[in-house]
Length: 182
Image 1 (tube, one colour):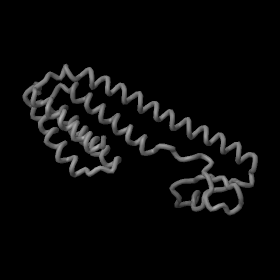
Image 2 (cartoon, rainbow, N blue to C red):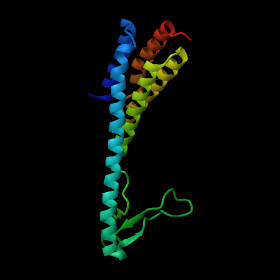
Image 3 (cartoon, rainbow, N blue to C red):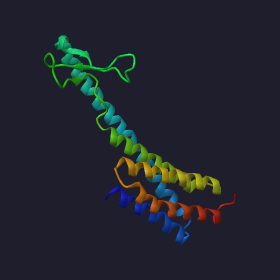
Image 4 (tube, rainbow, N blue to C red):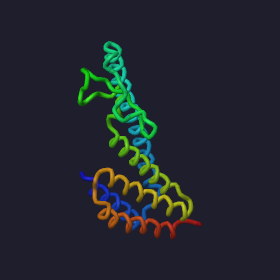
């Protein structure tokens, strides 16, 4: 399922909640469970990524120690105006494609997506636990922002997403005006 379809499904779900005037209590536990699951997944992916980086670094350090001549600073790094300073391993002199001693994160896009999903689930949790209209509105805006970020990360058309998210978000805000005390 594409992110655009998912966004449409989420917007449709939110709109249907409002239109059927269901109680927040009916959705609080599933949202709490979703939030707990995304927290666990976020932590697991972060740990996995860190373990991969540590293991690859360990192997490359052992390789570099065996051939100390084959280690140097990456071309263009470690200068006064450089954004980073990396060490590379060369298997032979003047190697065109040296390997980093400490690799970059192996799954940066997945980690970013998971982070946005976690923020989205936190936003849903904030909606169902909000006790004032202003808190609901702030949480709905936050959730819409998270969904837009997810769409961007996935390369989806954010304009098409806005056509669904905005009416659903406004419907939730309108519904909260009738059900909240402040």
